[in-house]
Image (tube, rainbow, N blue to C red; front, side):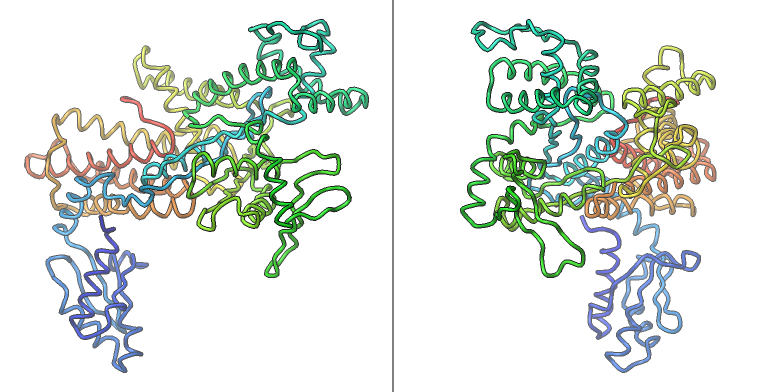
Length: 583
């Protein structure tokens, strides 16, 4: 379905052509003077240079060719601007078509295409902390947005499950419980089905081992040896590793489920490891690698670089691979398994150089096709009200589970104090409001920017917040429920300015979604629904909706807010939260 601005521009282009001028001058933009008009065309000013004619003369000639029924205002003003206000009939027709179209008229730009969205990136055996929040919710939102546009979107968590942390856990466990069969090289029986630790114990083992490594050189050596033997396939260590994976993944899924974040693929670094030897051999055969102080690196600098781009290290001097190696091997695997048209990565923006190196290496090594799009979205830091990275009261890194609990407890108190729902609905309602507060508070910021995490502001029921958006949806639901069956009511022309403003706000849905997709920016969706919610509430306060005596007018009002509700609910689904029935 054509976006409204494109439709108006095409009509203007035809008017230019009908007036004897080139149609390319007919581009229309949203007015920068909303007090004067809704849309404007400045093409006559540019055409005047081509046709050696006064721009106001061209503008007047073009205006005469426009269909007056499409506009409440169409005028040429000095020195040659064309000002427009679309008519209610034009809006009525457009919204009726929009309502009946699939996905409200969104073009399925991704039909037949596949994208892998790499987000999450947690390490097993370690609890999720607040540093994992932005990757999880921005990545989930972008994945949903790609699906909305028709892509086969695959969310890949990319677990950190193959590095030194595995060796550290094994070494520490061996010191604590040396008699376990996993450490007996001569053991040939079945290893225990149950792990020798709980998730809580595992989360204590790793930091203890990590701290010990820094102080005890012999322990550090044991950990490196355990890592090497694990990766070489030592049976007992592989059995421990599987225990670590099983209980860690179960805990991760529980935490991500609480965030309404879901991955289609649960692969990790270990899954990419088998691809590394052949990949490195191929790079050497193509003479892409050079030896540097015992390491193998790939030069990726280009003549056009304005700043230094160091070589991409692929094999360290001790023979070990690093993150870049694993990331490239993961690409090999993804190209083989999914044949993606695009791979999108969500990480801290401080990893921008790393991904620049990896992307260049992938193209030089022909791991991806020339047509495969590679994009890194680097996000900023979530800070406390002091402007510094968010910490617990004792200065530590807060667990993500605790952050969600704090937000939920905070919202529950407000829900109970204001008695906004019955006692039996408190928990379900609280969870939905808390999730909206948390996610909208984050996603309403441009991903690359740092932002201040503020419980009071994020959970407020007024202002640019998630709860305000939910309250608007619930208010509309209440009106619709009182009215009765509304789904098949016809869209009617607006009868007042606030209804027209609401209908015009609805028309911005498709271009906003396309801009959000193009820019990898869920914050644009947030800005849109805040504008739309504001238009709904302005219309509600200025118009007697259910009290309107004219049944025809009332039906038009109901149809308009019903469409707004459907649009708002679609948008919050893309952002990863949902509205309760009552608030």
